[in-house]
Length: 83
Image 1 (cartoon, rainbow, N blue to C red):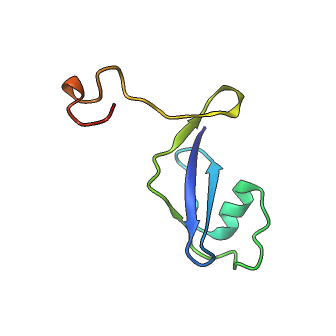
Image 2 (tube, one colour):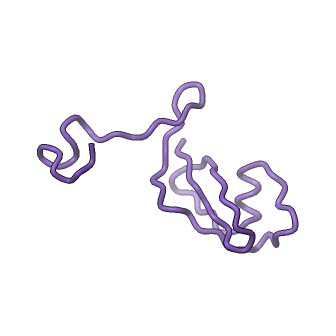
């Protein structure tokens, strides 16, 4: 299952959580529930936003591994700059 990073601008906190690709996390309360943490004094309905960190896949043993493009890059000969 992929992991995603979220930020709450209300309390300046960032959390990493695992959820399905189709799940939508929009509030601090929902994010804290997924992360298994106490929301503290931050209102549960405070909006959160997913950060553009890509999404990582949790591999065997819980280790995070980046999803790599096929050998040679995603564009012919690796021209897109992703290696």
